[in-house]
Amino acid sequence: MKLDLELKLQAWLDAELPAAEAEQMRRRAATDPEAARLLAELQNIKTALLQNETTVTVPETRPFYWSQIERRIQRQASLRPSPGPSWAERLRRWLAPLAGLAALAAALLVALNPSATPSLNQVSDMAEGFQTRTFRDESAGINFVVFHQVPQPSAALAGAPPARIRNDGSSFMTEVE
Amino acid sequence: MSRHTHPASPRRFPALFLLALALGLAGGRAPAADLRLEAKLIWGANDGPATVKYNLADPALAAALRHNFKWTNYYEITNLAAVIPLHQSRVVRVSDQCTLNIRNLGSSLVAVECIGRGKPVIKGTNALPCVYAGTNMDDTAWFIRLRSLDAKK
Image (tube, rainbow over all chains, first blue to last red; front, side):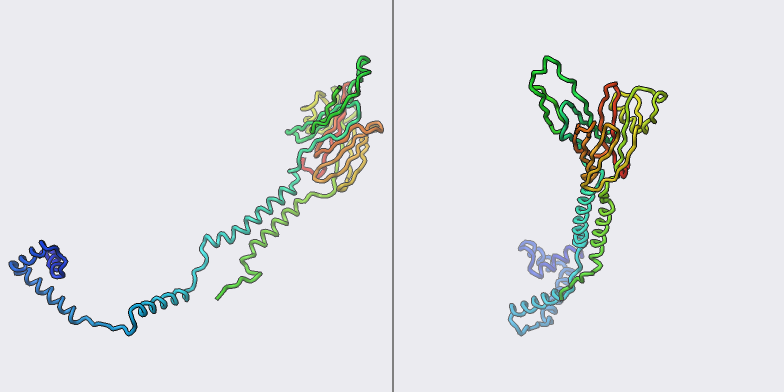
């Protein structure tokens, strides 16, 4: 007998088939001796299971019984040793102090590094009658301060107001008003 | 049962070790308080070495000066050294006519006062190395190069 037919007979016995197929199975069992034999065997098994299954009676009520099971599961879960910190947590524990130390070391190195000295090159005061120019030769890494005496004003400018010295931040300029 | 970490736990060892290392490195790079200063007086001219009684300046310095000024030859007149403690001043007499009053500001910074023929000519603040330059009436020039003897360059 085909497996499909066997499954359909079993489903008919369990009243799981629609009406049309159930009628088809009923006719098949009436006409086909092999189907009738299988059906009888299945009925016997079903009957035997129903009659011999042991019924266990729980002394407590159903909700109380299940609450006991739930409490037991929770108790066992709390007794289970907690797994160690995850690798991400362990990595974070290492990286947090490392990041702080790296920042501290970087700050110290920047603050104390002699090569980080600013290329300061300023003239703050100069005698009257002098002009100065400051510049930096980056290739040589040298600051230059060049100054020279300004030629004396001619006789036509002798009566002019005195020169004024202005500091523009990087060098002094001499302005004649 | 709670778990406690002992203060001397090995877990703290790397952090303490790295902190000590960082501080050690930083301490090793701390600048010295004293400035060992070199002051060189250089004369710039177009006269050839055969006609001049002074020695030629070192090639690197001469090249730097030649790169920025018009003179072809640079001669070393004097080469002086001074040790200036931090935040203190020293007078460096580079020639009969020129004296420098140099103050060590720390971190390779100096405050320089140039005194010519007894009169203050120029005052400024510079990072080392630096060169003070002036021209003479005979179309030659003088240069004072200041540098720290502890610097690499």
